[in-house]
Length: 260
Image (cartoon, rainbow, N blue to C red; front, side):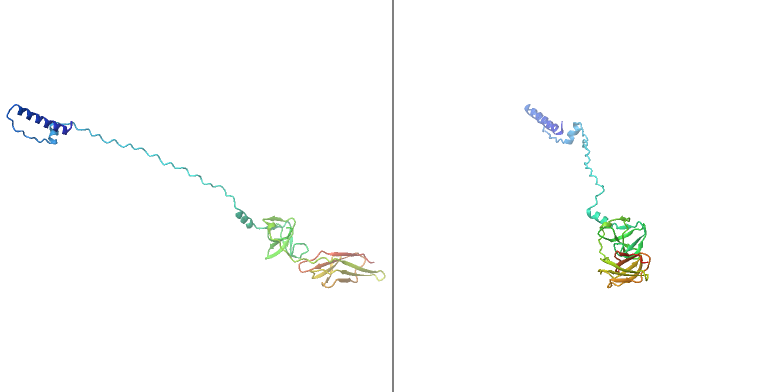
């Protein structure tokens, strides 16, 4: 029972008693109003203290850890080279040829061109040009010399076939005609040989050979030569060779029978 209900009951009891006394014509003593405080009531009628339960601890629900999605692994594979990088790698290679033997290096792509220097077997030389057949190469030789190498057994390295095709000055052409007129005098034991040939372009002069030995150097405006007296008792082979500053044309030869 709480304090307020107890106080109301005490007040009600007091009113009932006063009314009973009045009905019996009994002298009624003045009613003394007693102010009962809540504190006095509490003291008169001890009330079991209300059990104060400690507040239940709030249930702490552990929060689930935030799901962290695994990041996709970064691809670390080898990236295929692009066309540009492939082209760059190709252009970074050096075109070279390596002679299989010690070889002459010439003024042009052919054995008729004069030799400039010689190249060493097994040494790599940078290629800076080539002929259209890719059989002769313009190379950088020692001493800042550029010349042509045509060793068929040479080893090629790098993009040799991509070197630019280089044009050169032409050699003179072999004369179209080369004839002899020989007179053998058996009584006098003499031999006279007259040689004649046709005129060709790009010629600086003509060399005359007899049995492999040069016997004359003829100016380009001359187309005849006389060998007088010529040797006796042996066959004579005469060769004509046109030349210019770059080299010589293939030789044209005639044979004169021996004169006794």
